[in-house]
Image (cartoon, rainbow, N blue to C red; front, side):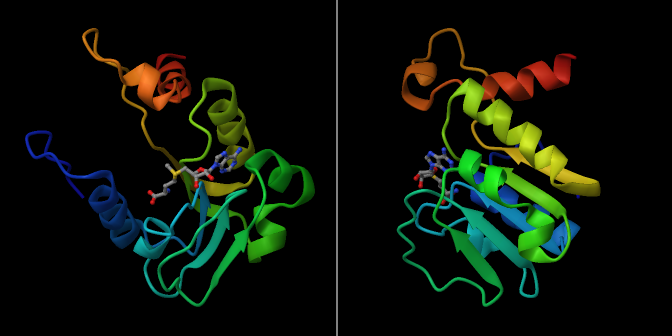
Length: 150
Ligand SMILES: C[S@@+](CC[C@H](N)C(=O)[O-])C[C@H]1O[C@@H](n2cnc3c(N)ncnc32)[C@H](O)[C@@H]1O
């Protein structure tokens, strides 16, 4: 799939297109909230959702398991392979939007990914100088920036 930088797509549309392109067998989502991003997976996907406080308001796909835990607790107690039958092919990190949390989520996601696993971050664009985004959205953009630099 080609992403055209001139066209601004909402993150859920981007996520939906990535699902459509990659068709992961196992999809892991950290930070499920209402379920609005978890339902973007293609039918047949095995979905592991992790959130200490999910308030699902959509009909999730049949093969979805929601773990009512923080991501740290989930990865302390479970593995994606144990929960889903095989490691994650695609993980979306959209939980606690702070550097140390999202870096730990990345490390745990990597450990729980298959050989060709893909890991996506929400809110990974650094704030612009004039913006108050860091105040509003935390600093979950830092791990993605560090990973691309190092
Ligand atoms: C921005 S919402 C997720 C939105 C959802 N991915 C979507 O696009 O519709 C963030 C969610 O992360 C959850 N959360 C907060 N701390 C967390 C943690 N330590 N581990 C996992 N999820 C966490 C919150 O309960 C909240 O539901």
